[in-house]
Length: 166
Ligand code: S3P
Image 1: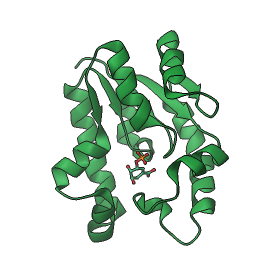
Image 2 (image 1 turned 30 degrees about the vertical axis):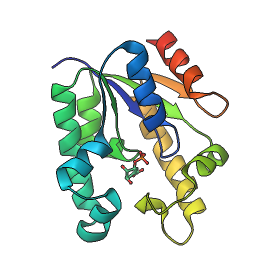
Image 3 (image 1 turned 90 degrees about the vertical axis):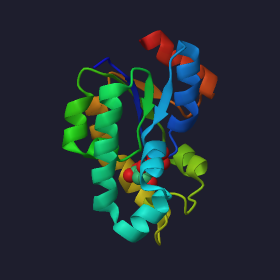
């Protein structure tokens, strides 16, 4: 197993934008756990939540990430809730984990609260997002090798901040 550079953070923190740019900057391959899940399941994440439920999604997510960590040696972005699984947190040890932090206002603006994110498609998505940020912050910090604030930075600046912190 070679170490990966793993990008974690809540929805709207920029993982899907920064991850590929970082990989390009470093000259390594990029992989995204949500993409792997969609490819494996043959349907969208919203469909998985709707038809199989969140526990099924979380199991698949943990499995896909375990495989990626074992065989990939570039940048790996993982879904915002991936770090909730104790097994995944354990597997992240030995990898360099970048936590993209985002404030509530910026995060809400970025996610647009669209139905593409099933966890934020309920009756009060703003409150759900706020709770999600509060509950997950300590977990992201627990696994992080490096924390990068994203609110006031462009993706290119964030890549430079990460590269400087490696
Ligand atoms: C989730 C975040 C999503 C996706 C799924 C669950 C979460 O990924 O994995 O909808 O629990 O925060 P992004 O963080 O890329 O939006």
